[in-house]
Length: 64
Image (cartoon, rainbow, N blue to C red):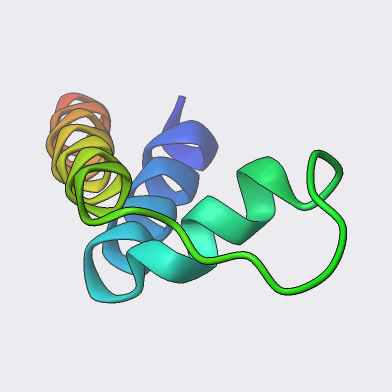
């Protein structure tokens, strides 16, 4: 579980700092050419990053 806690924490930090990167990682196969995510989509991915970060911290704290 410690591995998943660290993984979720790292993903959460990346998603919070750069929601565009997380959007691209999730949707790269759907679109051709230059597409940009909407502001709502970026906010949704940033919120997901916060949730991942919280879950990751809880999993790490349970193992220690």
